[in-house]
Length: 174
Image (cartoon, rainbow, N blue to C red; front, side, top):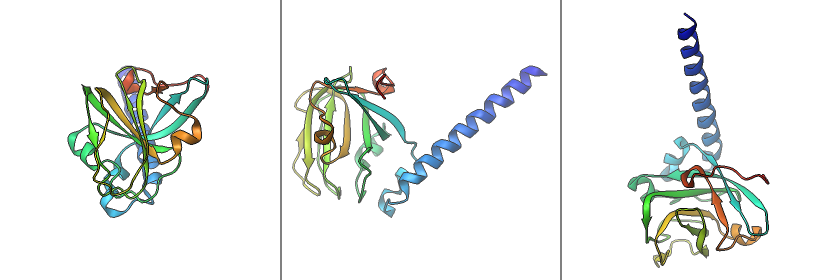
């Protein structure tokens, strides 16, 4: 009997956690246009960037994992809080190119290797540009942040992204 109670309690806790994640993602989704409504139903998770200057910056991010999510990205989003972004989490390292078609806001695009080390930053990518932005080497993830966010925080190539995708999910200086 107590085993059944424990199972029900865990199931209820899981349901509550899912509800909290949905509420959190709905808050961010209030300003989303209809073309980007898919983000309303995506959970927002924490991510940190640890700089070489011993500072940890916390961000709230959506994680894109599928080819469909990769192709949508932050297209049609018309405003983005300074601590909100998207992580494109790939299954293996590869060279990647992106463009800003149907992207309404400037973005900082941070390319990271499998250890979470930022290998390249393309700052303030121009909205609607069809120019390719390349990682120029194999990367494991791409982090998109609002344009200027990296500069405002002193984030540079060589700094570390901390997230479960890299096996590191926190910073001590948070």
